[in-house]
Amino acid sequence: MQQTTIDGVACFWVDTGRPTLTARLLFRAGSADEPLHESGWLHLLEHAVLHGRGGGTLQVNGFVSPLITAFDAHGPAEAVAQHLTEVTAALHRLDPSRLKHERDVLRAEGDMRGGPSVRAFSWRYGARGPGVIAMGEPGLGRAEWQRLQERAHSVFTRGNAALVLDGPVPEGMRLDLPEGELLPIPHADECQQQLPAWYVDDSLVLSGVVGRSNGATILPDLLERGLRMRLREEAAGSYAPWATYEPVDADRALVIAGADASRALMPTLADQARQLVDQLAQGPDPAWLDDVKAMRRQAMLDPYALVGTAMRAGHDHLRGLPVLTREETLAELDATGVEDVQVLAQAFASSLLIGLPGEAIAPTDIPRVTQPVERGAVFGRRFRRADWPATTHSLVVDDEDAHLLEGDQYTCFHADDVAGMLSWDDGGRHLITYDGWGLTVEPSHWRRGHRAVEALDAMVPAARQLPMPSRDPVEPPALPHPVTRWWRAIRRPWSASALATWATLLLLAALATFLTAGSPSVLSLIVIGYFFYAAWKRHGARTYRGRTNPSASSPPEG
Image (tube, rainbow, N blue to C red; front, side, top):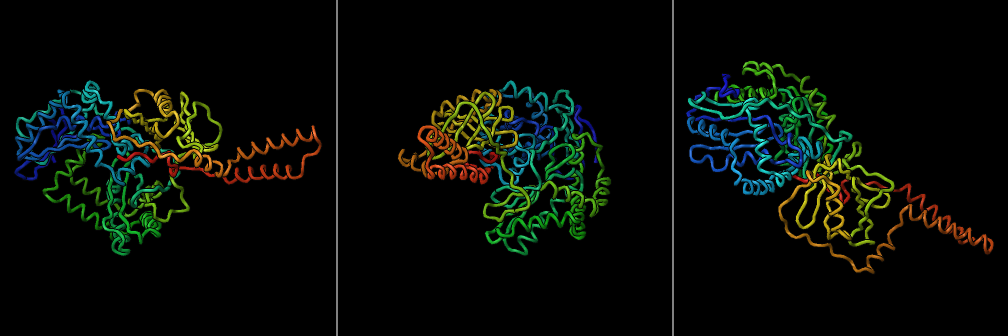
């Protein structure tokens, strides 16, 4: 591997002997650097700059990961060099006429993104840092050209870049970038929750946090192999187990593995997955580890895979780490033993989040991830559901909080905890907290719904109100006949507070009767006693809701 600089940009290259050239220009900034209300801005810049480029013998692409924005090119060396020269110049000479078009393209692309591996980020990180990748880039609606230019000038600089090539540097290549410093990698803050834990997804998903190392990149291979053996080869209940590794900050990475699963696996799916994790935490099979290391060594020694060494060097440079030669990287691989992987597997097991299909038998010894539910009185403007009193949900909004109530229990959405609020022209609103919990308010679903929307708009700072594109009309709820609604209300079991209130009123009435007309009847005392007893029993049997609450949604899919 060779190292040089091109116009102040660190360049790492190897000579694979190919007649064409592959290049990747890396910048140290990604989706984890973007707050929710600015999500998608780097992706928009990448799309705008690459519009109309490439074709024929020159293939171009780009991507934004949690920590990196990259521009790829492959083709004749002179064409790749010319492309990178034009791209670096275009990054700071943006065409404002492309804004709306590329924003619409990204929104269409967003409809196709997602999946269990992406959702795993939001279950762990919510709507901040690495979790933003799962939120669908709602910040695109706030992307103004002037602010995009400011973002480009802060990210796309010489000091914040690295170039990787699989051949010698073409003559005359220029990288037209301004001066700038290497941007620090933001710390990945996890949601406050007890781990291990589980949640409902549409397939099996296992995720855990490990330290970034060569051994950590081996763990996904071991997890995938274990899932394949257990679920496909032995149980014949899965087709395509998978696993991946994604750095989330300077020192840690998220390892994610999963598999589709047949209905026959549902009773034992969680147990089998956890047994695999426990097996690795007790020490991986040495034969498995040797197989993975042999596969890695073979790939690293393949002349056409030499660029992998340069690619790692580029990423290490952007982390501020020493750059390793291929020999040093091979030595690091060879030194990775069972004990090293075992420590990583134990970290994975202790931070485990399990996504399970709804039909699977859920674990009983670890908690389900649920939104915190509180009890007590709340104050503010109260809005009832359109079908009240058939349902008792209430929305209470003041200057600092929105509360979704049912009885004396509520979920709270504090203004300072709201990462963003999706806003549609038809009045629909969707609050997303930093922990990824959501609250959807459709005006037609609430009495005085337009007033509720006005209250939410006043509560959430304007910078975090995210305009969304037009959508299909939201159908108002089909309301039962008023007689039906009241009949349902009458038949609904009374709350503990309602029973206690009625018992107190009856007791006062009995006391008044005693003072004016003598002793109350035995029957009235029995009724009063029953009401107090029923209130006490219902208070003891109260339940708490989490993500199963239909009005408190799961994190939006990316």
